[in-house]
Image (cartoon, rainbow, N blue to C red):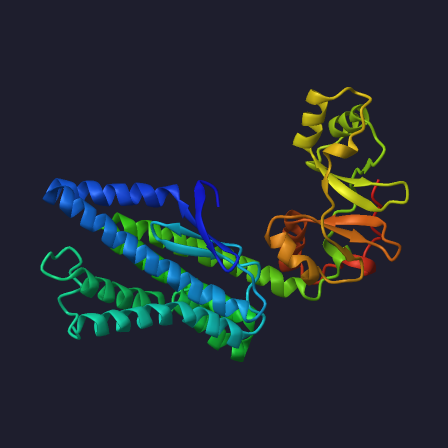
Length: 370
């Protein structure tokens, strides 16, 4: 995620802080300083920092549970609205998603119980007043963790409770229908939360926007994933692609760039095998720094992952969701097309409008890569 920096790593996962969180902490400190001076500002910033430390532990509850199912999280980013763990894929089975989703709130419950035992205070009714100087910081932190657990278990997708709801529904009605229902509930919750935020709670408005957009986005991705399970790669790939020969010069690459509207060019050898990708910026950089007759191959990016033409799009979905193209090759390893998120989205749109439309081998034969 842009505008963020790494502050540490744990078991291969980078912990990153977004700059907006630092601005949020500065704002908290400034308000506290205006009301109670430097000591109050320091205590407020320290308390909010402790809350976000608990948020990190919450996210690692998800991350370490997901790792048991082979799901990797390269990073987790802290934002003013909470933490976002970047997982390379979602759990394959509903019961796995249930365990991953509930692990985060359970971490907050464990933290709260530990703090209650440490302070010896069981009555947390006054601790919910976070700004009350008469309540100890550990009591407030315990109450905050209980609040985080309860709030995250609200059945509003894509919050943890919404994922628990989807997992439960998916066991009965399937992943796609369950996602639509959970996302719909999540969007209704986001609308209500945003409405409440209009009455003096601007942070709730930002949280509502995040929930609404995340619910819509994941519902679309899930729908695409379900549809892609039985969709052959040849049905969704781009086939009219101008490819650049591995032995081409900078001038030849520029000529091809000017002759097409492509943003990405496969780099192939004389047999048609894929060796890399050249983006428009790569070609422009080559033009700026090299002679026209210099080879273009050194400027190519590594070859993208490939799948066979008879495989389904589901085999490439992980890479497509990350925004990377996927090459489609024939039995001899020759490039026959490229899968992109745009090409898949267009096929999904056509299928939704015309379910009887023919794709792949039963339609017209696709053109070969030029």
